[in-house]
Image (cartoon, rainbow, N blue to C red; front, side, top):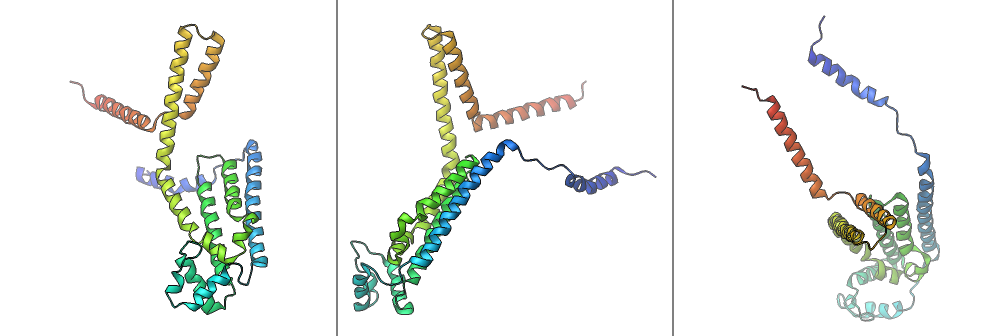
Length: 273
């Protein structure tokens, strides 16, 4: 019995995924194990500092009014709404934080838990946004990304900021607007990050090419010896090679090559007279 071509293709398509599952998996390169260990250390350190700060806030944050709150609470209770939230506080007008404070006065008997909870959530959310942004920067090495995550956590959540982290009034003022600021900054960076990187590579490539031209001119004028010339030339060429070709030129080259091959195929398939 003969088997048609379509049935052969169907059977091959059915067997293909099974054979793909039997392919050997990629093995771990032993030379990368130290990098993984260092990256894991940085990530564990960031998690440790974040957990330590959260435990400190839960256990030691002030549950009673402190410092300037005695003066501001008198304003909240003596003036009608919305005049009480529009008053100046040390030269500022924190309208949205004042809404949380007024709600805490009327609904939670000024126990500070609302301000502490909102401020803490905003602080941790800001650290998370920065950490995720750094971790998704794939043009950085693994160790550098892990170190960036740790530094993002330390920059916002280390306990030297205890004055802001443990005091609900200060926590709300400092951290309430940070997540939106950080997210907006990350959105603009992601939008122009590729363009900035390509522009930096283009400028670096131009500088290296000018250095190579100056080196050739110095060699022709006998201002540099053959050994220094060879060493400098190899370093410049290696640096240019590391930057790679411009994206637009490589794309244009691929298009021209594909067009040339298509023309060759069309000529080869044209019947001769």
